[in-house]
Length: 202
Image 1 (cartoon, rainbow, N blue to C red):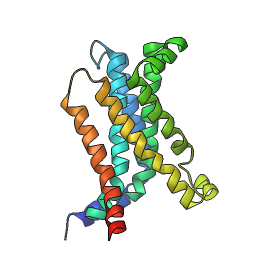
Image 2 (cartoon, rainbow, N blue to C red; image 1 turned 45 degrees about the vertical axis):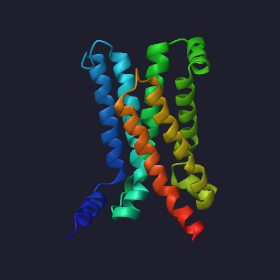
Image 3 (tube, helix red, strand yellow; image 1 turned 90 degrees about the vertical axis):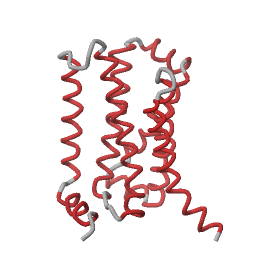
């Protein structure tokens, strides 16, 4: 028996709502660490980065669902909505920590968005995710229809790229980890587009 079968069996036994609980618990735990000094001497900055990095991981996990199924037979479809919604809420938490706890003033928030390109890019990625979060429910799938819904949710592709570029840009100096996230993002997107081009050329 391949390793894929027990993985798929285990995934089927864990409902999507359990992921929401785990995600909320992790977010709350990070916030608790920030309040109690567990995130170092710059807790707001550390919390902001922790939320942002985990959000990017979730966005990449969402993008990985289809390639994993097509290439390896690992079926995480039952978790995809929860992964995507959690990714949005961690992006939202990242934004709120930055805006409310770090920058604090509306004029300064707007100035940062306008004047700092990496903030502009991050904000663009955040805005791209909002319609996806709003329509990640059965009612909106029926309302939009599956074709329009799938087209709309391709906004996840530029949102992930913007998030990865935002991470690379805000890092001080040329750091390896943000570049790895960007490379993984581009690789995951390439796995989606390459087969289509191949069929078109055939």
